[in-house]
Image 1 (cartoon, helix red, strand yellow):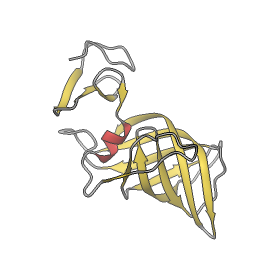
Image 2: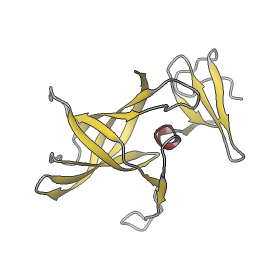
Image 3: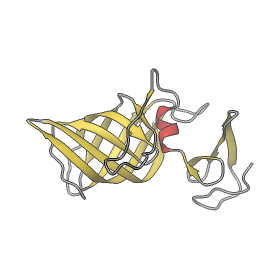
Length: 162
């Protein structure tokens, strides 16, 4: 078991959540960070681990390089850009360890910062329901007539208890 949280450095409150033959998952009670083994981010695990019918999406980056595995999952989310007072509703299309792709009626442009709240019940195994609050940047957006697909690279996230 790791001796300290890779995000906040605290030693107290680090506990193992779940172990599989491939990996062990840990959480920090101080900053609520969740990770897989030493130094591996757990964003997709938090969001997808308890979802029903999550299927990997096999695709390659347009430049031909391998992409982080994506998981097709329909989850409600709310988002807003800087300066927005109102939250916009959307639905995820897929999630990876580095970001989220969602559909929305609003047009967003690349390099727009966004705050996202994913509504994920039972995000941490054995824990209470949580929202996953994310900060990220739009990296890709396309679509028209109120049906826009927006890809956001998640730079930071935290769990927020209901």
